[in-house]
Length: 244
Image (cartoon, rainbow, N blue to C red; front, side):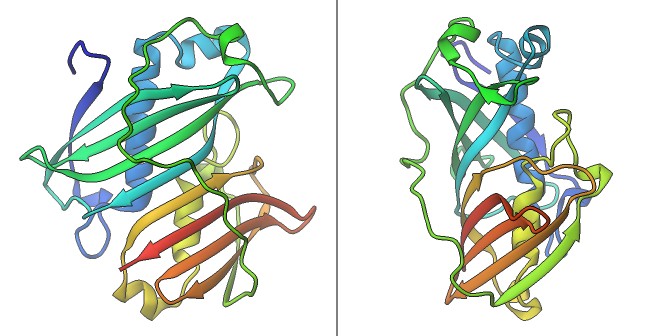
Protein backbone atom coordinates (compact mmCIF):
# COMPACT_ATOMS: atom_id res chain seq x y z
CA UNK A 1 0.00 0.00 0.00
CA UNK A 2 1.12 3.57 -0.60
CA UNK A 3 -0.13 6.99 0.39
CA UNK A 4 -1.47 8.01 -3.01
CA UNK A 5 -5.00 6.75 -2.36
CA UNK A 6 -4.49 3.36 -3.97
CA UNK A 7 -4.67 0.29 -1.78
CA UNK A 8 -2.77 -2.91 -2.60
CA UNK A 9 -2.26 -6.37 -1.15
CA UNK A 10 -0.24 -9.41 -2.17
CA UNK A 11 -1.95 -12.78 -2.50
CA UNK A 12 -0.33 -16.19 -2.94
CA UNK A 13 -2.58 -18.50 -4.94
CA UNK A 14 -3.32 -21.68 -2.99
CA UNK A 15 -4.17 -25.11 -4.35
CA UNK A 16 -7.76 -25.09 -3.04
CA UNK A 17 -8.39 -21.77 -4.81
CA UNK A 18 -7.69 -23.30 -8.22
CA UNK A 19 -9.69 -25.31 -10.73
CA UNK A 20 -8.75 -28.64 -12.29
CA UNK A 21 -6.29 -26.83 -14.59
CA UNK A 22 -4.45 -25.16 -11.71
CA UNK A 23 -5.91 -21.74 -12.53
CA UNK A 24 -7.57 -19.38 -10.06
CA UNK A 25 -11.33 -19.93 -9.88
CA UNK A 26 -13.72 -17.11 -10.81
CA UNK A 27 -15.40 -17.41 -7.42
CA UNK A 28 -12.04 -16.91 -5.69
CA UNK A 29 -11.24 -13.89 -7.86
CA UNK A 30 -14.56 -12.33 -6.85
CA UNK A 31 -13.83 -13.08 -3.19
CA UNK A 32 -10.40 -11.46 -3.49
CA UNK A 33 -12.02 -8.34 -4.93
CA UNK A 34 -14.48 -8.27 -2.02
CA UNK A 35 -11.71 -8.85 0.50
CA UNK A 36 -9.51 -5.98 -0.62
CA UNK A 37 -12.47 -3.64 -1.22
CA UNK A 38 -13.73 -4.32 2.31
CA UNK A 39 -10.30 -3.66 3.81
CA UNK A 40 -9.85 -0.41 1.91
CA UNK A 41 -13.40 0.79 2.64
CA UNK A 42 -12.75 0.27 6.36
CA UNK A 43 -9.45 2.14 6.14
CA UNK A 44 -11.10 5.22 4.59
CA UNK A 45 -14.04 5.15 7.00
CA UNK A 46 -16.82 3.80 4.78
CA UNK A 47 -16.57 0.09 5.55
CA UNK A 48 -18.51 -2.44 7.56
CA UNK A 49 -17.88 -0.62 10.86
CA UNK A 50 -19.48 2.59 9.59
CA UNK A 51 -22.33 0.67 7.99
CA UNK A 52 -23.20 -1.37 11.08
CA UNK A 53 -23.14 1.73 13.28
CA UNK A 54 -25.56 3.54 10.96
CA UNK A 55 -27.92 0.80 9.78
CA UNK A 56 -26.43 0.75 6.28
CA UNK A 57 -25.07 -1.84 3.88
CA UNK A 58 -23.13 -1.80 0.62
CA UNK A 59 -24.80 -3.78 -2.16
CA UNK A 60 -23.10 -4.65 -5.45
CA UNK A 61 -24.81 -3.31 -8.56
CA UNK A 62 -22.47 -4.13 -11.47
CA UNK A 63 -19.14 -5.74 -12.24
CA UNK A 64 -17.17 -5.65 -15.49
CA UNK A 65 -14.05 -7.85 -15.57
CA UNK A 66 -11.47 -8.48 -18.31
CA UNK A 67 -9.00 -11.34 -17.93
CA UNK A 68 -5.78 -11.58 -19.93
CA UNK A 69 -4.91 -14.71 -18.00
CA UNK A 70 -5.79 -16.26 -14.68
CA UNK A 71 -3.10 -16.60 -11.98
CA UNK A 72 -1.83 -20.12 -11.36
CA UNK A 73 -1.29 -22.29 -8.31
CA UNK A 74 1.60 -20.95 -6.15
CA UNK A 75 1.79 -17.71 -8.15
CA UNK A 76 2.05 -14.46 -6.21
CA UNK A 77 -0.06 -11.56 -7.40
CA UNK A 78 -0.62 -7.99 -6.28
CA UNK A 79 -4.19 -6.68 -6.29
CA UNK A 80 -4.78 -2.93 -6.31
CA UNK A 81 -8.03 -1.08 -5.74
CA UNK A 82 -9.28 2.48 -5.46
CA UNK A 83 -12.56 4.45 -5.49
CA UNK A 84 -12.77 5.82 -9.02
CA UNK A 85 -16.09 7.68 -9.06
CA UNK A 86 -19.17 8.73 -7.16
CA UNK A 87 -22.64 10.00 -8.08
CA UNK A 88 -25.66 10.66 -5.89
CA UNK A 89 -26.45 6.98 -5.37
CA UNK A 90 -23.61 4.96 -6.94
CA UNK A 91 -19.99 4.48 -5.90
CA UNK A 92 -17.51 3.11 -8.44
CA UNK A 93 -14.48 1.06 -7.44
CA UNK A 94 -11.78 -0.26 -9.77
CA UNK A 95 -9.34 -3.16 -9.45
CA UNK A 96 -6.12 -4.24 -11.12
CA UNK A 97 -4.41 -7.61 -10.69
CA UNK A 98 -0.69 -7.64 -11.46
CA UNK A 99 1.81 -10.46 -11.83
CA UNK A 100 5.25 -10.53 -10.20
CA UNK A 101 6.63 -8.28 -12.96
CA UNK A 102 3.95 -5.62 -12.48
CA UNK A 103 2.02 -6.57 -15.61
CA UNK A 104 -1.76 -6.20 -15.43
CA UNK A 105 -3.34 -9.61 -16.01
CA UNK A 106 -6.88 -8.78 -14.84
CA UNK A 107 -8.70 -5.44 -14.74
CA UNK A 108 -12.14 -4.78 -13.33
CA UNK A 109 -14.58 -2.06 -12.39
CA UNK A 110 -17.58 -2.27 -10.09
CA UNK A 111 -20.54 -0.21 -8.95
CA UNK A 112 -22.01 -0.20 -5.44
CA UNK A 113 -25.18 1.18 -3.88
CA UNK A 114 -25.53 2.12 -0.22
CA UNK A 115 -28.85 0.99 1.26
CA UNK A 116 -30.80 1.56 4.44
CA UNK A 117 -30.62 -2.01 5.74
CA UNK A 118 -34.03 -1.97 7.45
CA UNK A 119 -35.92 -0.29 4.60
CA UNK A 120 -33.97 -2.04 1.81
CA UNK A 121 -33.81 1.25 -0.07
CA UNK A 122 -30.87 3.16 -1.58
CA UNK A 123 -29.71 6.26 0.25
CA UNK A 124 -27.69 9.24 -0.96
CA UNK A 125 -23.95 8.74 -0.51
CA UNK A 126 -23.25 12.36 0.42
CA UNK A 127 -25.70 12.32 3.33
CA UNK A 128 -24.57 9.01 4.78
CA UNK A 129 -20.80 8.74 4.30
CA UNK A 130 -17.80 10.77 5.41
CA UNK A 131 -15.71 12.32 2.66
CA UNK A 132 -13.23 9.90 1.11
CA UNK A 133 -10.60 10.31 -1.61
CA UNK A 134 -11.38 9.55 -5.26
CA UNK A 135 -8.85 8.71 -7.94
CA UNK A 136 -10.29 9.43 -11.37
CA UNK A 137 -8.38 6.62 -13.04
CA UNK A 138 -10.19 3.66 -14.53
CA UNK A 139 -8.55 0.28 -14.82
CA UNK A 140 -11.33 -0.61 -17.25
CA UNK A 141 -13.10 2.06 -19.30
CA UNK A 142 -16.70 0.92 -19.00
CA UNK A 143 -20.08 2.52 -18.43
CA UNK A 144 -21.64 -0.85 -17.52
CA UNK A 145 -23.84 -1.10 -20.64
CA UNK A 146 -27.18 -2.87 -20.46
CA UNK A 147 -27.59 -6.11 -22.38
CA UNK A 148 -30.49 -8.39 -23.23
CA UNK A 149 -31.59 -11.44 -21.33
CA UNK A 150 -31.39 -14.77 -23.19
CA UNK A 151 -33.97 -14.99 -25.98
CA UNK A 152 -33.82 -18.77 -26.00
CA UNK A 153 -32.88 -21.41 -23.48
CA UNK A 154 -29.94 -23.45 -24.74
CA UNK A 155 -29.28 -24.66 -21.21
CA UNK A 156 -31.35 -24.50 -18.03
CA UNK A 157 -30.14 -25.46 -14.58
CA UNK A 158 -31.91 -25.30 -11.23
CA UNK A 159 -30.21 -24.91 -7.86
CA UNK A 160 -31.31 -24.28 -4.31
CA UNK A 161 -29.55 -21.54 -2.36
CA UNK A 162 -27.36 -23.12 0.30
CA UNK A 163 -26.54 -21.72 3.73
CA UNK A 164 -22.93 -21.32 2.60
CA UNK A 165 -24.03 -19.13 -0.33
CA UNK A 166 -25.21 -16.41 2.07
CA UNK A 167 -23.03 -13.50 3.22
CA UNK A 168 -23.18 -11.08 6.17
CA UNK A 169 -25.99 -9.13 4.49
CA UNK A 170 -28.08 -12.35 4.61
CA UNK A 171 -28.20 -12.49 0.79
CA UNK A 172 -26.47 -14.65 -1.81
CA UNK A 173 -22.88 -13.43 -2.06
CA UNK A 174 -21.84 -11.69 -5.29
CA UNK A 175 -19.27 -14.39 -6.04
CA UNK A 176 -21.95 -17.08 -6.36
CA UNK A 177 -23.73 -15.67 -9.42
CA UNK A 178 -20.82 -16.07 -11.88
CA UNK A 179 -20.23 -19.53 -10.41
CA UNK A 180 -23.82 -20.52 -11.27
CA UNK A 181 -23.61 -18.94 -14.73
CA UNK A 182 -20.33 -20.59 -15.74
CA UNK A 183 -21.66 -23.97 -14.63
CA UNK A 184 -24.76 -23.63 -16.82
CA UNK A 185 -23.11 -24.53 -20.13
CA UNK A 186 -22.35 -27.78 -21.91
CA UNK A 187 -19.63 -29.87 -20.26
CA UNK A 188 -17.54 -29.99 -23.43
CA UNK A 189 -17.84 -26.22 -23.92
CA UNK A 190 -16.66 -25.58 -20.37
CA UNK A 191 -13.76 -28.00 -20.72
CA UNK A 192 -12.54 -26.26 -23.87
CA UNK A 193 -13.14 -22.61 -22.97
CA UNK A 194 -12.15 -20.13 -20.27
CA UNK A 195 -13.95 -16.84 -19.44
CA UNK A 196 -12.00 -13.78 -20.54
CA UNK A 197 -14.64 -11.08 -19.96
CA UNK A 198 -17.58 -11.00 -17.56
CA UNK A 199 -20.33 -8.43 -17.17
CA UNK A 200 -22.51 -8.99 -14.12
CA UNK A 201 -25.62 -7.05 -13.20
CA UNK A 202 -27.06 -7.70 -9.74
CA UNK A 203 -30.79 -6.93 -9.77
CA UNK A 204 -32.60 -8.27 -6.71
CA UNK A 205 -31.69 -10.01 -3.48
CA UNK A 206 -31.68 -13.79 -3.30
CA UNK A 207 -31.94 -15.57 0.04
CA UNK A 208 -31.29 -18.86 1.76
CA UNK A 209 -33.71 -21.57 0.65
CA UNK A 210 -34.72 -19.87 -2.62
CA UNK A 211 -34.98 -22.19 -5.59
CA UNK A 212 -33.10 -20.56 -8.47
CA UNK A 213 -33.17 -21.16 -12.22
CA UNK A 214 -30.25 -20.27 -14.50
CA UNK A 215 -31.16 -19.80 -18.19
CA UNK A 216 -28.34 -19.67 -20.74
CA UNK A 217 -28.07 -18.75 -24.41
CA UNK A 218 -24.88 -19.56 -26.32
CA UNK A 219 -23.82 -17.48 -29.33
CA UNK A 220 -20.46 -18.79 -30.52
CA UNK A 221 -18.07 -17.64 -27.77
CA UNK A 222 -20.53 -15.40 -25.91
CA UNK A 223 -23.05 -16.64 -23.36
CA UNK A 224 -25.99 -14.75 -21.91
CA UNK A 225 -27.40 -15.78 -18.54
CA UNK A 226 -30.50 -14.82 -16.61
CA UNK A 227 -30.80 -16.00 -13.02
CA UNK A 228 -34.32 -15.96 -11.62
CA UNK A 229 -36.41 -17.18 -8.71
CA UNK A 230 -39.35 -18.84 -10.52
CA UNK A 231 -41.60 -18.76 -7.44
CA UNK A 232 -42.23 -15.04 -7.98
CA UNK A 233 -40.56 -14.58 -11.39
CA UNK A 234 -37.86 -12.43 -9.79
CA UNK A 235 -34.72 -11.87 -11.85
CA UNK A 236 -31.86 -11.62 -9.38
CA UNK A 237 -28.89 -11.32 -11.75
CA UNK A 238 -27.98 -11.14 -15.43
CA UNK A 239 -24.59 -11.94 -16.96
CA UNK A 240 -22.79 -11.74 -20.27
CA UNK A 241 -19.60 -13.80 -20.60
CA UNK A 242 -17.03 -13.87 -23.40
CA UNK A 243 -14.97 -17.09 -23.60
CA UNK A 244 -11.82 -18.17 -25.40
